[in-house]
Amino acid sequence: MTKLFTNIKELIQVRDTSIKKVLGKEMNSLPTLKNAFLLIKNNLITDFGLMKDISNFSADEIIDCTGKMILPTWCDSHTHIVFAGNREQEFVDRINGLSYEEIANNGGGILNSAKKLQETSFDDLYTQSAKRLKEVIALGTGAIEIKSGYGLTFDAELKMLRVIKKLKENYNIPIKATFLGAHAIPTDYKNNKEEYINLIIDEMLPKIAAENLADFVDVFCEVGYFSVEDTDRILSAAKKYHLVPKVHVNQFHSIGGIAISTKHNALSVDHLEVLTDEDLENLKTSETMPVSLPSCSFFLGIPYTPARKIMDANVPLALATDYNPGSTPSGNMNFVVATACIKMKMTPEEAINAATINGAFAMNLSNKVGSITKGKLANFFITKEIPSYGFIPYSFGSNLIDEVYINGNKF
Ligand code: NIG
Ligand code: FE
Image 1 (cartoon, rainbow, N blue to C red):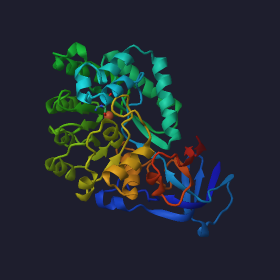
Image 2 (cartoon, protein in one colour):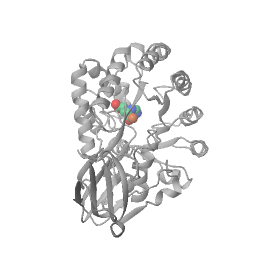
Image 3 (cartoon, protein in one colour):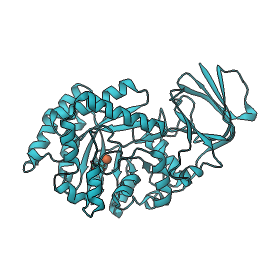
């Protein structure tokens, strides 16, 4: 089955296969073709070019895109979309003056979500999560990473990872699973963190590896959560099972999380609302992708990742949502791109690179998604009629997506 998209006002992010990620200074350039065509066969991109060079007009279906643009779908490399219920009461508590940290210290926060999740059945959790997944695909996300970390018991962590596995089976976008058992210290282990880490290392990790339930491992490396030493222990243990690290670091404090993550060749380090010069030096000499989560900064009112500082040092940057019930109850990558431009002073070119090809890198998926490239998955979206691609972040809050295609089919 071939489909030919014609008269595309601008085809965005056209790349050859060799590009895995785009570094800081190159991020300001976004390759596009004006008045273009795109040809797909079954689930793959097979050709693209200028309308004037189109050689073969025959296709099973021809879709006219006059006035509209095509972008590769967003690559959301950091989410927690498997969760039970919501935490809107904490939202109100914050409006009334409590801080995110105070709420967590009072037993709210991650522990509140863990309690809810432990009491929720597999089927109910799957239904809630699938609804969120469908929601974000309709918003243009075509590859996603999903973390565990709201279980915090052997059974509940496995339940979360099995929900992710079922999502992988039932939805045909690339989904990567991350084991985040070290998301918070469960109440039962409040005074015995070591024992919880032993549970992660001696019981959870072997079982997860035996059932092949995770692609990556994550730790919330932060004051009051897991220390650099804890992170080192967990990442070392996960290495035996070939779980690549993607680590929550520098959300509130810079405590050495970046150095330990790069030492373990982490695929990504995520959050970075706080970033010292030493942290940046560390990133410069690593292959690790820094990931910024601007919707989290927006929602919690905390600093934004210093994107300019990172990109000016010629270090790459990816953007992701962090969709979760506490710090970021939104999975809208269009909003992420707009917020990165508005609040972090990223140009539309930089933000689009960060939300597509660099996001793909942060999931080890650069060979499959993240750009309009021959042989990659036909995962892309057609915009409404817009004057320029910069109009997407400029019109923050408007939905400018007309159609989303996943594996060559309309979603
Ligand atoms: O990435 N910071 C750690 N974890 C999540 C939020 C957890 C929560 O509040 O439920 C995050 O922001
Ligand atoms: Fe997160």
